[in-house]
Length: 78
Ligand code: F3S
Image 1 (cartoon, rainbow, N blue to C red):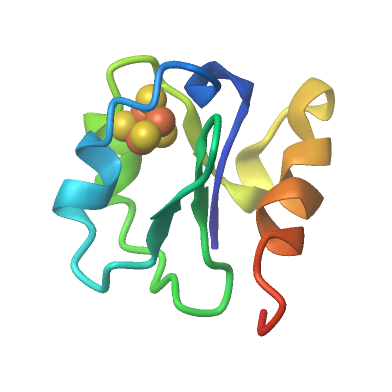
Image 2 (cartoon, protein in one colour; image 1 turned 90 degrees about the horizontal axis):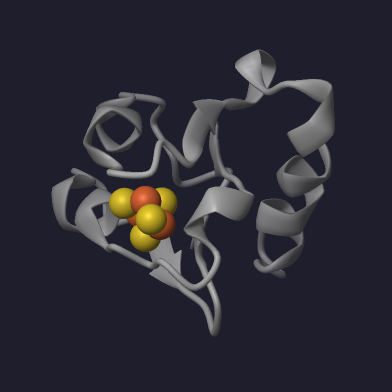
């Protein structure tokens, strides 16, 4: 799955959600979140985010690892 990180907070550009082919990116109060089991790992969102907030889960640096759980915890059905 891909994960949205802190760079999205209060930016919420929305380009990622517009290009996602399976509509698995959801708007929250201060940032967007990727549904971990709906994501098909196409990576299109990663390339369009203007603030580079999106990474593949296994390519996330230690400083942003908490965002794996933060994205996951938004979805009770994940
Ligand atoms: Fe946020 Fe970037 Fe998407 S700022 S809403 S992750 S395009």
